[in-house]
Length: 197
Ligand SMILES: CC(C)(COP(=O)(O)OP(=O)(O)OC[C@H]1O[C@@H](n2cnc3c(N)ncnc32)[C@H](O)[C@@H]1OP(=O)(O)O)[C@@H](O)C(=O)NCCC(=O)NCCS
Image 1 (spheres, rainbow, N blue to C red):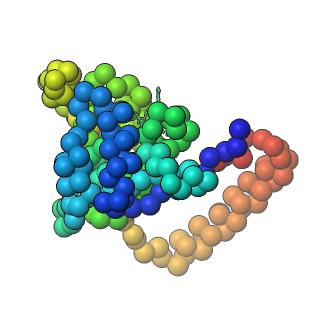
Image 2 (cartoon, protein in one colour):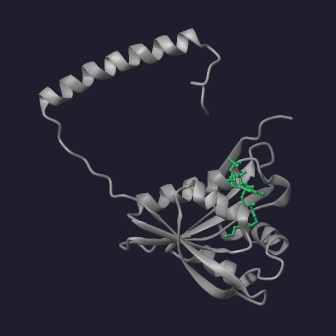
């Protein structure tokens, strides 16, 4: 089987049908209405993306949304869903990584989300990004009466410091030594564990 190359782009109102197709198939008891989804796509403080296989650009395979009002430091992952046939192939991770990056560039320091207590796959995904459990909202998801777990990812403010020239020179020579060692290790274990994705 060929490796899938996922492509992401910003969602537009023209994507509404495709998004609602995945939404209603995925969230069978608590799908958002078409009107709510349309309002999300049109919200100037939100950023929605859709994803597709590079070889099937017409077929939306997933979508995800971020709410991050400009000028604020809080953001929310509003939703994320991958079509059932496209799951476990890295798309959920790719979309979440992109939205975390958008949030960072918008100045978000605390990124929140809610996830159903009966949804371990999504919880695993969020944990693997460093989201931590913050609170539980009892019976938040109706009509199923399922608790919501509120999670937060802290996005540290980038800090830039000025290195003294002496310090920078020492670092440069240490880095050269490190590079030489790493290169030697790679050369001696050509197919070894250094080759990470
Ligand atoms: C949650 C969801 C978006 C993940 O998308 P995906 O493309 O299948 O996820 P990925 O292939 O990128 O997997 C990323 C990680 O998610 C976790 N994960 C995904 N599916 C999982 C499963 N069935 N069981 C356990 N962990 C799972 C794993 O940590 C995985 O990392 P790994 O492959 O290194 O183990 C997808 O399962 C989905 O659309 N679910 C239905 C909608 C939903 O629940 N949305 C979340 C609402 S809060």
